[in-house]
Structure formats: structure tokens, C-alpha cells
Image 1: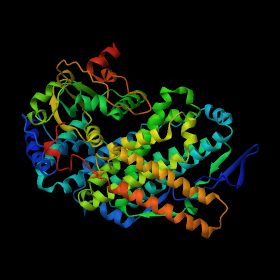
Image 2: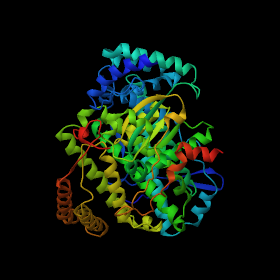
Image 3: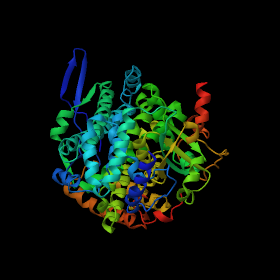
Image 4: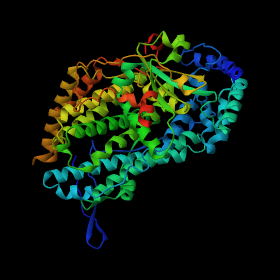
Length: 225
Length: 371
């Protein structure tokens, strides 16, 4: 896993460079980038598996070695569903708290929609909001461009994070590994308060502040206990 | 502009007379679109176009397969009860709202369905997303058409498919136009939903309660067109793209504004101020669109709204000419100066200083951006 991470890092750095110039060199445990992070998605839907594998190979010919190793790695991990205590890969997008929690109101709608859907299908939650995440310490290239306090959306579902990046656009993304959920979602205590918008012309009131609490790990524990 | 429910009565059940309706077509009625399918095939051929961001399309495919609203569009008895209570002019206004909305959704269904069919070989992922979007649109159209049945009406969708005129747009124009109409659809529906949630006394028809989940579908459809345009950066990154982006923003915003100002009774009927509602929707749609289009209009500049309001006045005069008793030659002569005035307002709005914009994945300003 760790050696794969290094390989991916080198390839993804190159791949990202020409699209976003947004590269982060982290420790070995951070496998970074918008580009490779989504490769496992092709394995999510069995019907498309063959096609996607082939198309990924074709598309990224210069990086075949690295890509292949990432994919074989993901094949094995997706065959045996990861349990909570194993190494787990987390994908994230991050931006300043005001953008994520106050300005982009459709973001809140999406999270509640996803919660409703997970409830209907009895799916276990695999996405969380993290205020001032500790994992950011390992991403200096992100933090130097980030207004604080920051808020991250973290999920073990890489493709969904790719989708959320497409939706929100003005966010930075990456991925990392952690031994436990608690470690992955650790946060520095911060008090969030957003001032009232200067001009509010919508014919409806703004969503209530604090809506995000039930999407934090601590908020979810309170709900379930 | 008005939809005229005309004849063709067919009876489905012994006691229920269902009137199939046809819609009178004008410049502002919801359109059916067709495009150059061969060019689409070339654009999304993974063999030819190696830059296609497979990650984003795979992510979208997963999101559409998730099918958040599979069980959402289930009717209850409130619909029939509400329809029976609506009478007088408001009844006709609601019928027209349902007809127009149903036509718009059905139009999306036809286009996406065909694209799903045509792209199957060259790009199965993009094709499947189109098919899943046509699933959503069919669901929406069907739901609206069932709403019409409470008014003893039904849109003859089979007839519409064959009889309506199709507007041809080249693929890149389909991208701009459909992106905007999906995103503006989201902002219209969520605004109505949130307004009615805050002011339940105006909740006179149950369909609005479905809008919150419904419009998330529209928003996702828009995201897919974002990804399609990002996969074709030539449609986003030059001066021509900027001019076309502004053009499509303007035509979509103006069409909505003129349309809605002719139907203030509907918006006032649900407790909204039509112009304030529209401006809110335009501003929010424009902010959203700035995440992908290389240029958008400065709609928050008060001059933009003043121009829209003048267009409404001119449009009303043009419509008034159509309604009086002059012969058609006189009518046309009277229209000339008004149409010229409208065109000059449009041109002036188009030429207002634009706002540079675009996705951070493509934009030049990205390295300087603080998130």
C-alpha cells in the first residue's frame, strides 16, 4: 500500500500538473490528486468494469505502470470490503467554512438528500463534515491557499467526492489514508459564526445556522446513542 | 403565448372525459431540440478525444445510478382535491403551468433519450448518463401529466413528439442552452419550494411540495453539462466562447423574464412578486453559471434590471398590437419600431461589460485563488 502510494504520487503529480497546476507533495501516506483518486470508481459498478479498465489504460498510456499498480491494488481491496480497523482511504474536498456551510446552500440540500437516501436503503454513513480537520497539517500546499477556519467534506466514496468537486468547483481536493475513522476525522476545536448577509433578496429565509452539526462525527454519535 | 386546450376528447374511463390538448406555439413556448448527432458522436468518441475526463463521467454515472428520487414521485389524493378547489382564472393559469412544465420536461426526455441511443457505441459512459437523465425527465413529465389528469386534461405526448417543430442547435449550443435551462430550473423550483415552506398559506397545489427533491435532479443534470463542456475546452476557452456564453445567458434570462411577466397571476397566486422572484433566480443562476462559462453577464448591476423592465414594456405593446382589430399589414407596420426598440435593448444588455468567469479547473486565475 505504501509503495503504491509513492508510485501514484509520482504519476499523479505529472498528470495534475498540466490541468490544475495544483500538486501537493505530502508524506508517503498521502496519495494525492484529483486525477488518480477517482480510479477505483470504475470498479464500483460491475457492469462497466471492463470498459473502464480498458479506457483508463488507453487514456493514460504514459503512466501505465503506476496506474496499473493502483488499479490492482484497488481490485484487491474492493474484493474484500475494508473493515473499520483496517487501513482506509479517505477522499476530501475542502474550502473555507463560510463558503461550505453558509454561502453554498445547495450543498446543504445535497447532504440532506444523501442522508435521506442512505436512510431509505439502510446504508451506513460514509461521508462526514470536518471543521478545521487535523489532516490538513499534512497538506501544506492546500493550507497555504486556504482561508480559515476551513471545512472539509470527507468520504470513503472517491467518485462521490469527484462529483462534489465538480459541483462546488471552488474547492481543493485530495485523499489520504488513516487507521481509524476517529483519526481521519480528527478536528481542532473551532467556533463557527457567520455574520448575517449584507443584502438578502431571496423570497425565503436563509437556512438555519448549525445545520451541519449532525454531519460531524460527534453529531452523529449523539444521534445514535 | 397562451396554451389553448383544444378538443380531441378521448374517454379513458366511462365517467371521465379526458381532453388531449395541443399547445399553440410561439417564440417563447418551451422548445423541442435536436442536434447534429454525428458531431456529438465524434466529440465523445474516446478514441478521437483523449482528453475526456473519465473520472468526472464515472463519478456522474455513479451519482445518476444512485437514483435518489426513485420513490419520490408518488401522488396522493391531495392532488385531485386541490385541483377541484382551483377555479376561475387561477385554474386556467395552473393548467397552463402544468402544460408548459410537462412540455419542457418531455423535451429534455426526447433529446437525452436520443443522445443516449446514439452515443452508446462511441462512449457508453456518457450514453448511459444521458439515458439515466432521460429517465428523470420522463418521470417528471409523467408526474406533471398526471397532475393535468386531475383537471380532466392530458398532453398527448405521442402527438407532440411527431407534430412539434424541433429547433436545431449545434452541439456546443446544446451544451450552453441545456446547462442554463437545467440550472435555472433548479433555482426556480428551489425558490418556489423555500418560499412556500416559509409561507404555507400560499400552498394551494401539492406539486410544489415535491420541488425540493425534484430540483436536485435538475441541478445534477446541469453538472453533467458542466463536465461535458470541460471535456471540450474549445467551447470554453476563447473569445468566441465568451461571446456565445453571454449570448445564451442573455437569451435564457430575457425569455424567462418576459414569459413570467406575462404570467404574473401565477406567481402572485402563490404569493411571489414576479419580478423579484425572477431577478433572484437570474442572479443565482448567473452565479452558478460563472463556475463554468468563461464569461457571464453583470446581472447584479441595477442597469441590467432596468433594461429587462423596458423590454417587458415593449413586449407588452407588441402583444397588444396582436390583440387589436387592425389588419395584418397595419399590425406589422406598427410592430416595426417596437421590435427595433426591443432589439436595441437586447443589444445594449448584451454589450454591458461582462464578468470574466470559469471553472477553476480551466481558469487562468486559478493559481492566485484563495479557497
